[in-house]
Amino acid sequence: MSNPSNAQALIATPVFSDELGLLMFKPDQAALQAFRALLDKSPVLLARAPEELAAGGTGLVTRKRKVSPLPVDAVLFFASQSEVFKALGGAAQFTGWQGRGEQCVIEGDDCTGGFTWSSDAQPVSLCWHHDNEHREKPVPEVLEKIKHRLVAFALSRVSAFVGRGYGVDVSAAELSWWAASHEVHDLLPSSLALMALGRKAKPTERQTALGWRDTDARYTQRDHVADLTEKVKAIKFEVDPEPAASFMARPKLSRWESAAYLKFVRSQPCVVTGATEGVEAHHVIGHGQSGMAMKTHDLMAFPLCHDSHMKLHDGGWQQWERQHGSQLAHVMATINKAAGLGVFG
Image (cartoon, rainbow, N blue to C red; front, side, top):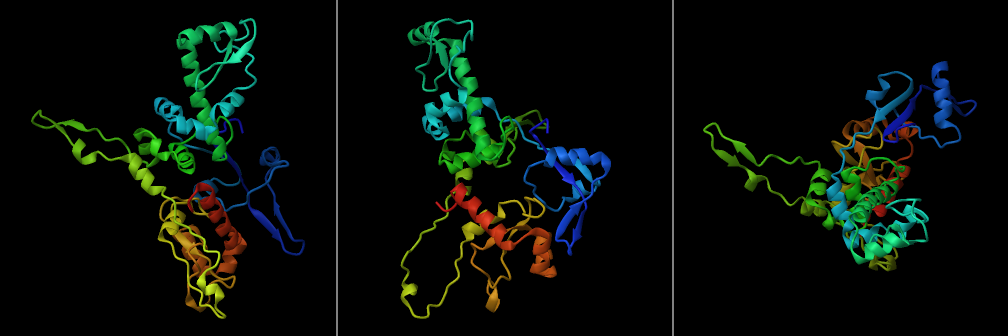
């Protein structure tokens, strides 16, 4: 995997041996070494291949992850704010990320004498000579180094948070995910919030047929940060350790409902196809959870696209689970992600 921005997978047709209890794959000779290199001593995720990948036959496939580059100035403005920098780990994390600090950022190893961390809010390593010079009057070259490193540091922290390796491009949505989880999303620049919401800036000025200049700015201006904040509001999830019903001999159980939680579930990718459009919240059926024609609690839901949702209900939950895993495992994964994102407050 030379480019971390690319997602690699191996497409193969499985062979089941019920008698031996084995699941086998038989790649052709050309793909065998690719299988070995990619899977050797690593955990393997088995999933149904999306149609656009399966159509190409078996073997090693690469799907490029399309990420629009983030505007550096906007990321710098965001990361420079004290609350955001603190959420990133502060000065201690920033200096630790840079290394041992035994090299001057101005002249590197050419500087002589001892080294120290600068007194800036975002410290960088300087030799004593340049540190004294920078204290007396900020050195432009040092300030530029700080900006460059702060942006790289912020994106590396976000990349680690969302589970991606170092050097992988971070999307605006992932940056907003990190910001919402650390309660600093209201500090995002409007340009980043616009990108995270998938909106495109429209030209606000145009030339009419008669040569007049016209504008639709008053119709298109929106507070993108406010819209993003509205989408990441935490669900009120209060816990009563001693509900009144628990003291009854035969309490009547009520169904927990939350439109906000179901909205979150529908915002997640389908667990079968990975689709993000037209996703529905499927409530677990079977497992003793859907008796008396009543849906399970809204907490027992996970995301499925419409076609996968219909296949589960039409083909039976047992057959679906043989192909895609236990519904309960998908529910646990959804709850775990919701809790980790701060959905429950």
